[in-house]
Image (cartoon, rainbow, N blue to C red; front, side, top):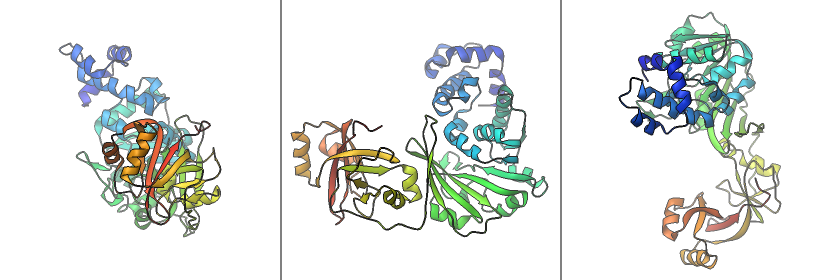
Length: 401
C-alpha cells in the first residue's frame, strides 16, 4: 500500500464500500470494479485483510480498522498481544511498531506509550487506527527507533518492547544477530534508557543461543496458541542478580479462556518404557520447544516411548494434559508388509500420520501406503526404547477435547 492509497481509502465513502463488501471474495471484487473511479486495488487489500483479521484479531477487527497485508501477516495475534499486558508501568516504548497490535494492548497498561515505526505508511495507518479506537496516551514517531531512543534521557522508560524485523527483501532470517534493529549490538543503549526490556523473537530461534546472546536475562517464555508455537519472549532486567534463567512454556488458546505456564527446573531424568501403555500423549509445541517435557512427564507420572523424542505414555487418561491426548489401539514393529496388511484388514483408507525420529516423512508415508490424510485414526511413527522403528495406532478418546 502507498501513502496515496492509504489516504484514498480513509474517507467515509470508501470506508462504506469496504464495509459493504468486506465479506466478498477480494479477487472477484477487483475484477468486478476494475476501471471504476475508486481505489480498487487498495479496497481489495482491505477486504482481504479484514477476513484474516477476523480470525487473528477477533475483537479489534470489529472496529473497522485499516490494515496492510504484510504487516498484518507479521503482527502479533490478539491472544499473544493480550498476554504481553502482564507487563505494566508508567512509560514504555515500542521500538518496532509495525501494525501496532502490541502497542494498542500495551497502552492499556501504561500511563504513556511511545510507538516508533520507520515505514511511513504503517506510521500513518497506526495513527488513524488509534484515533478510531480513541486511544489518547500514545505518541507516535516515524523514523529509526535507535536514533529516537538516543534522544530520551537515561532511565526514562520502565520498559522497552522490541519485535525486530526477521526479513530482508522477503527472505526470512534466523538468529537475533541478523535482525533489525540489532538488539544485541545496542544492548548498552537500551539498558541506559530502561530498566527492563521485552523482546519478541522467532519460534525458530534456539533457546541455548538466546542465552548466549543477551545479558541480564530474567526469563524466557515460549508461547503457543492452540498448540502452534507463535513466539519466544525474552525478558531482560538490568537488576537481575540470579544467574539461573527460567524457561517457561506459555500455553494459550484462541477461546481466551486463560493460560497455563510450566516452568523448567533442573533437568529431570527420563523414564522410558519397553512398550506403550494405554494412552499416548504429545506435549504442546511450547513445552517441546522449551525442552521441559521431562518436567511435565514427571508431573503426571508418565513414561517416555523412547529417550530421544517427546512422545509420552500412561495407563491413565489425563484430561488436563497440556497437549494432544489419544487412546492406543495397537503398537508394533515397523514393517512395510505388515503395515500394508494392517491397513487392509481394518479397511483404513484415511488416517493422520505423524513422525518423530523416523526416516520417512508423513507425506512419503501417505504416498507409500496410498492412505489419504484425515479421518479418525492416528498413526505415530517413531522408535522404541531399544531404538527399533515402531508404529503406534491411536484414536481420540470420546472425552477428549
